[in-house]
Image (cartoon, rainbow, N blue to C red; front, side):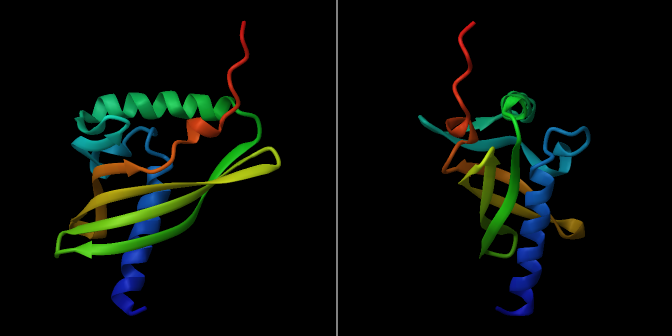
Length: 138
């Protein structure tokens, strides 16, 4: 690995750390394109930033309802795509109770000024909601 690869990996790790806080005020404007291309069950769809953030908030609420859960960055990989774009794969470890599972997503990221990255396409391979206990019937 050379110095450029190390710098790119550091940028991806910084992006991943900020992505984990995506629902916090002021985080999304420079981190997330508007719209962002999102891979779902039916293919890719451009999603307005505010709609994407609403989905993130709902997911965060479901995850926070799970007792003793946490998510940490496990690994990052990056492939430059020309001078301005990066294809990044980020793996997280989602722990809940005594178990853990690997979550993986790919991102198409736009290099911006000030050495930051903006997500233009979010391509999740796994979904944390698939690993939460089913809600109890009321």
